Amino acid sequence: MGPQQPPVAARLRRARLGVVSAFLLAGFAAAVWVVNIPAVQQQVHAGKAVLGLDLLVFGLGSVVAMQVGGHLIDRWGSRRIVAGGAIILVLALALPGLATSPVTLGLALFVLGLGNGALDLAMNDQAVLVERDYGRPIMSSFHACYSLGGAAGALFAAGSQALRLGLEQSFLAGCVVAAVLAAIAVPRLLPVGHGRPAPGAELAGTSVASAPPSLWRRVVILAALAFVLMLAEGVANDWSALQAVERLHEPHALASFAYGVFAIFMTTGRLLADRITNRIGPVRLVRFGSAVAAVGMGMIILSASYPLTLVGWGVFGIGISGVAPQIFSAAGNLSKSGQGVVLSRVVSAAYAGQLVGPAIIGWIASSVGLTTSFVLPLVLLVIGIAGAGAIGTRAAAAPVGRV
Image (cartoon, rainbow, N blue to C red; front, top):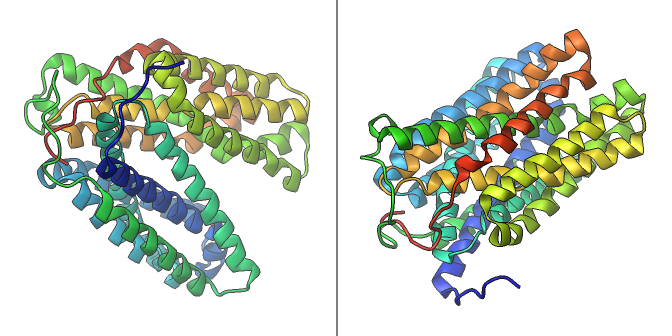
């Protein structure tokens, strides 16, 4: 039996619902876009190379918003940035359906990326604050809601296609659902000035460069840890199905189950990770999770059987599931005055890992084969085991002085 928790105020439960809704919104909007990529590609007559550039523009917009957003959060509070990011995301979600050329699609995706990046950063900032007031780990449950939102968005987009809605109508319908989620989220978030200053270490102002050397080193280590582990996680998103086709000669329809198994176990793991973290602590969670994920990746590399490969993707998914939330939570608790800036650096590093991961794996695979290239994420998971101590302990019960 874990330690008995104090009752949670209604206002804090309301804030948690707001953060849950924000994560659902982000996952839903991302899935609506991803599922419609083939149709959009056909509409704008873009080849794979050009589409790849447009997708990089989306990533660029997200990273720009995250970098700017950290400073804005520390000045205005994350509730306002969630609101701004949600408004941009809801409106921009319609733009890919209106694109008529690769250039207009690139512009649409840059704006969509701005909304995605601002919302992603600010909702994680709110999640840190709500978790801190709860006094126990709940960050992984928020990230599970992102996964659930993604599943809902994928089903929604697939249903729109089954109903033979036009591309423009499908995106507009997605905007309506996203707007409802935004309307639920924003009013419930923690207001500016909530709480009291957190004890312990803090940054000198909002500039990471002005931080004491010890804190600066920890920010860099957490960012590096986020980068390598999210790069490893991204392997499943981009390469799991193709690996089953190339190595095991499975048909494409059956190979898609590889990612499906990963996604199911990933979501399940995130729903369970908070309770595990509450019992064993974030450092052991990251260390043990990285080790389990490494075992799963090793199974995938060595397996000559598709059922065993599916087991490997499941083990990998449940192992990696709770890692990123703990890194974000640790980053958010490094500082009171510069929380937004610190979090922006670490979240951006994680996002960059997911962004460049497919290109790195693809480049290695072109020389040694796709399955052999999976040795890289296996090595990165070993780095995660070794670097888990950077997560440290955090005082989750003490609220910060601003939201």
